[in-house]
Image 1 (cartoon, one colour):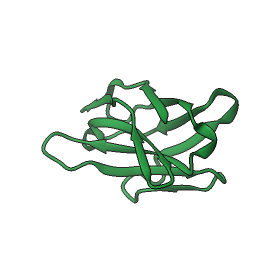
Image 2 (image 1 turned 120 degrees about the horizontal axis):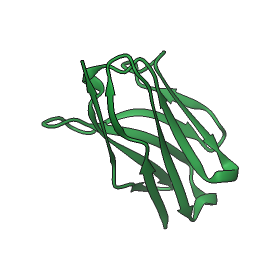
Image 3 (image 1 turned 90 degrees about the vertical axis):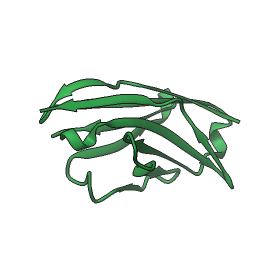
Image 4 (image 1 turned 135 degrees about the vertical axis):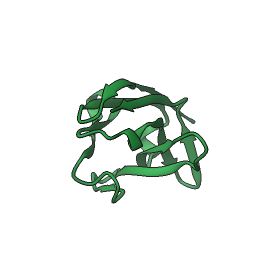
Length: 115
């Protein structure tokens, strides 16, 4: 079992920045990868970024050059640094952990970008 708690969402003007955090606990040594997804009203949940247990990172084309995923193993926390935010980035952002065939999710944190 893995528990995930997101924080750091909020209201920001277009062009601004936010940093999301995902604190994870439980069977963290069996985590294969962690990532961020987002879901805007009326849309399906979409993948944003991923970091593997080996430290490799991947980002969706829509956020490349603006968002960065990183981790602090000492704090059991994964971050999503979001710069140059756009109104279309408005969504609920969810932290995800992959453990073997299983996916674990946080409760989500709202990010709202206004122009």
